[in-house]
Image 1 (cartoon, rainbow, N blue to C red):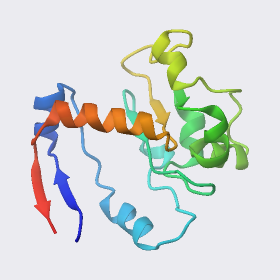
Image 2 (image 1 turned 180 degrees about the vertical axis):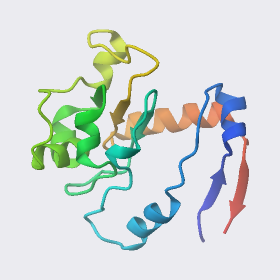
Image 3 (image 1 turned 120 degrees about the vertical axis):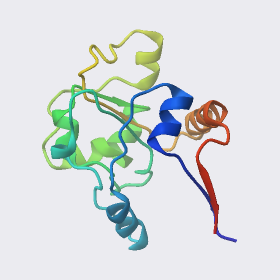
Image 4 (image 1 turned 135 degrees about the vertical axis):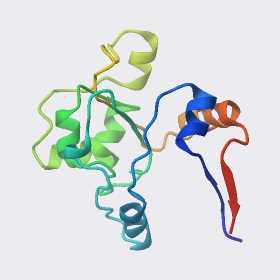
Amino acid sequence: MRPRIQILTEDALRQHIHLDLKMVDIIERAFAALASGQVVMPPILMADWLHPGLHITAMGADQTGKSEIGPKALAEADLYVCNRVNQCETSGELEAALAAGLWTKGTPPELGQVIEGSAKGRMSEKDITICDLTGTGAQDTAIASHVHSALGNAGTIIDN
């Protein structure tokens, strides 16, 4: 059985989660990376695509050698947050940035620290922020549950 895919338009996302969003057409690059079946996935989002106010939540780099975001993007972002630093250093976006010698900002804050207020989060609407979730199942499930409850059946469902 093929998976069900839910496609949400910009308008549906704006209506249901009240954020001004702009969809980026990276479908071909994402498909090429996924279709290759390689363990080492090339980044599908590059630093020169960043713009003021952008937030990225990366959830696909769950094994050593995988990355979704070009390493330079982490260095250029105003804030980079890990779910767990020790995980992201070995299987996340931070791993690639460290290997490329582009991460020079010290130990990044962890998501829990930002949530509890012991580390700073977004400081202005113009900040470029990246959150790297490397497969902590409880966090991924909580996020997916929240998004599903907020969006419900918004968008178009495709059964393949």
